[in-house]
Image (cartoon, rainbow, N blue to C red):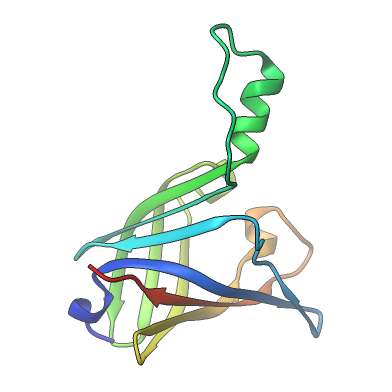
Length: 141
């Protein structure tokens, strides 16, 4: 994998996590997913369709619905061949901020696969880590 292949905009087409020998799809078919790469930064976004606008005096319920219908994160990354490490600076899920997560990247026929041990325990989401496999299709520029 080289940086010129990585730079651009991608859409998530599959995502699976394996925990305790069981593999589960974690791709919500109702969401739109985008991941973007520059030469040294990444950003990801997901949202549900048809998000409602806030009222003039947004209620806590409106704010919560808005937060649940949109996710984003960004940071720096290191790329050395297939070895890829994300260093998260900002994220809508605060458990990720300040974390570094290592993956392997492969790129074949305009499809990017990002996979590796996912630190669910360190992030505070589970008692054991999982193995994450995400597949992205490059969008036309």
